[in-house]
Structure formats: structure tokens, C-alpha cells
Length: 492
Image (tube, rainbow, N blue to C red; front, side):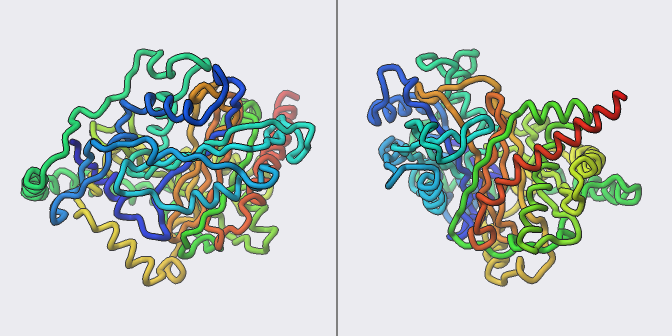
């Protein structure tokens, strides 16, 4: 039994019927590589064995009586794989449009809180028409292949970007019939150490002890926070601070969200990003944000909704290497970045963002790695939920200042072919959560030489995310052309 960290618990309490705090992923798999061929029972049984020692798949949440402390993780003694993995088939032609429509629907459903906080749908009958950076035109019958699509959904309380990549390594292998990557490298996931269900009195006792000790942590977190404020003021004076929140322009996706979800997917070549990095000296993350800024600029301009000032993105940053906390599934901080949507020229946008992001990274690194976790730990369990419900009920997102416009995550993935339950992964699209006031999330993951873009949005805010993702490869091509021109001019 392990207590949820304050940050993990906050994601539970932030959830509302409209603001569902789960993260998703779409796997496109080649079933022809599965030894002995594909069958759903065999796929399900292989998954059942693979997840046995991964706590995120076998533990459930249990509340402390009277909510005296944050909830705890307990082993689900009645765990049944059939509650979590489901089999569906695509209707009609089983093409890309049908697959996306089904995934939109699945992303709009909450995770069942009474069991471990994850669900998976194996989607059969997908006719893949060669979408991808080097594939044929979507819908071309000559390119169609039968593929499996696996839609995975996990509550944010159980996973962040870095731990999600780790889970993939525990479930995937380098060959169709090989051991998972983490096991082959000598790593093993930490299985649940305590498989018993604690009694009510034990839970109550733990809550009382936690409540007594709770105030003692305040002095430990106040002084570092005061230091951060002082140093931030100094950075603002010197012009080296990251972009501040609450100063973002208003866009259509900065209102209250509904429970619906709409998804868009795109692919680009990682080599193009690396070439731009080589010529410019910028980081891959700078290039990702520049491309995203250009795509958002084009999308909003097409709809006559482009603001004069640049959009502001929250960029999650993993602090797993710096944190001093052993517990907790989420170990993240955040950086605010302007996306240069006020700059048309992609090379100029990259240069502007490179300089601004350098200051933002230095500023973010100066903030203690556990600052967000410490304050989330100190807050009473339901503080976040009450604050969010008040925020939503008063529709502050539609009247007050815009905190940020969207969330953008860049997750590095393995650069070699991987196999999931024996099936080769052709594509892996991550999808993050959306919030009241920020109804658009862009998550980018590089895998085996391809950069996969997953966009998820409230359909009332972004009714056509497929149109938005079309601009990503276009903006990358524009930036690459500018980089080649700059490189040629430099060599001359």
C-alpha cells in the first residue's frame, strides 16, 4: 500500500465530467509479425502476463476515511484483465476516418474509478492506406494493409510522459518473440509489495497520523518558494525570465470545455528535425515548438482568428533526474513558452524561440525540482477539485485573463523497431489531457525515425483537429527549406 503523492492526487480531484484527466495513446500495429498469427484471446492473455508486475496496471485507488489525507494505492485483489481490455471492430470500410471517429468516442469516456485506472481497446478491421511521412496517399486502395489499432487510456494520476515511455519499454520487445526491452536490459518493474486490502481502521489511523504531521512540512517548502519569487523578480528586471502566465491572448480554445473529444494525427521524419538542428544549433525541442507555432498560426489565420500577440504554451518538463522524492507517479515541472505565432518567417521564428527558450529553460531549472510536488502535497486533498469546479462554474476561463493557450509535450521515444505483444509498432501517437481554459493539447513522440503528432481537443474549441495537423508537415517543410537556404548562405 502506497499513498498517492500530492501531485498524483491533484489529477484525481481535478477531474470533472467535462475535464477528464486521462492520457491516451494510439498504437498502429502490424499483426502479420505475431508468431503464430493474431487472435484476440492470445493477445489478451499475453498482455495479462506482461502487466502482472507493473503497479500502474494492477493497483486501484482507495480513499482515506473522511479524506483526512490523500488516497492510497492498494492492490486490486479482484483484478480481472477482461474489465480492462475490450475488442471492437471498425464499421464500413474500416478506413482512417472510421478509426478516428471511434477513437474520438473512446477518448470521451471516463476511466472507471473502481478498478485500476486504465482501459484498452483492440480495434480490428483497420484498412491502413499508407499514411505517414513516406507512405502513399491516404485512401489509395493500392496501399491498403490490414492493421490492428490499440487505443490505450490511463488516468494521469498513474502516469506522466517519462513514466509512460518507461511503461512502453516494459511492454514492448525488440523482436516479435523476445522479452520486453526493460527485462532484456536487466531492469524490472517494481511490482506491488503489499497485496492485501487495508482495513478501515488502518486507513483511518494513517489519515490521522498524516494530518498531525502535515503542518510540519510548511516551513520546509516556504523558504525555497520565497527564494524562487525573489530570483524571478530579478530575472524579470534583467529580461531573462520565462514568459509569464496570465498574459496569453484569447483564442477559441481558451474557454470552458465539454466532455467531447476530437483527435488529429500526423507524421514527420525525425531526420528533418535533426538536419534543422544541425544547421541552426537549436535543440529538437526548439524545432518542435517552432513547427507547432507555425501550424497554429496557419490554422488560426485560415479561420480569421489569429491574435496579434504570440500564443503561450505550457511545456511539461520531466524532473525525474533531479527530484529527491522516491514516491509518486508524476514527476514534472512546467515551462512557459511563446510560440512565435506572430512571426510568419519560420527561420526567424526559430531564432526568436531559440533565444527565448534558452532563458525559459534556465529559469525553469532554477526552480526546485520538487516545488510543484511540495505544494500539491501540502494542499488539502480536495483543494484542487473545489478550485476547478468553482473556476468552471463561474466560467472564469471565458471572462478572466488567459493563463495559457494550450499544452505542448515533446516525448523522446526509442529509435528502433518495437513489437507490442508480438506485433510490430508502425505508429505510436500520444494524446494528453485538456483543461478548462485550454481545450487543446499537442503531444509529440519520436519513434523509430518518425515524429508522431497527436492532437486532442474539445470539438467546440477545435472542431477540425485534422485540419490543424495537416499544417505540421507543411511547416516542417518550410522550416527545412529555410534552414537549407541559411546553411548554403553560411557555407558561401
